[in-house]
Image (cartoon, rainbow, N blue to C red; front, side, top):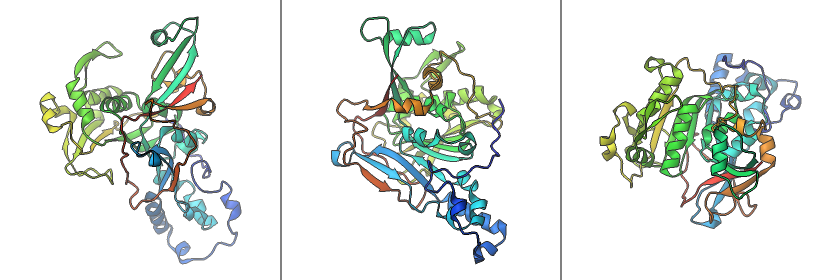
Length: 401
């Protein structure tokens, strides 16, 4: 399937940035003859690139320390002047109104906020975004469904609670499925931070490799090497969708999945694993030793240990000619496709009926409007990040449908 035409010009949108939709109407008609405007267009564009590439727009809510309830969660918002350059004058606005979407880093503290901000936008606008970061969390959906033929029947029956003709099911969707609700994404780089337990982190990454779309490069960051340890310990062979045997647990299976999707070893698809040599929690840049999945084997487990506090970075690159667009054809029994299961509802419809919950019984309610700190984003480098202090925590949204 060919990718959508994204050449349509669109304005900046209030949903994703602190800028008025009618910015043209608010600027002066007399353009100031400043030295900047008198610069050659090539130099102005170079300056625009530098400014916007150094800009981060952060949105969302994240638990930072569940060992201290006084500082459990925080809400982040962008700097108030993040896109001030767009407001200078008409000329600069015309030259940058599409450019900034390609360059700024969209940084979401949770997947729900990502959906809240991006799903109301037009496909033409979303498709211009090139850099996006998000913290990986799952969404949990609770539903009343009539048992039907196919794969969903077995799931519902297994999760049946009580008698009667209806079944109560609780379904969980990882980040790969969540991003299917934003099918217009055409990212150059998607960066995912995952501080979940080792098994969940492994499953999240594997799902992104096998079925994730909308990105050409995935940077998957974990606070330690535990996901690889889990994979090496639990390696085994299981049949895939085509009935072939594959090795679950070994990172080499990531490359195998990519080759199947993108056209073999000569496609340019690759998976590279980086590990830091020294502890560092301020940037995603890998100052690390490197190994590749093709040489990682059970004997390599001595490279990692349970007390490892060195961050792990897995870089996944799609093939040169890979079609990264989300397929429009849905399978009614594909349990990994959130759009098929949600019976055609978009995120706005789902969100109206959403109830928040935590996977942990004693972690507290995610949506309680108590004294949550609201912070303006502060950074020197757009790639900076901070790991939370979590103890037995996982967050989710419970949607009753």
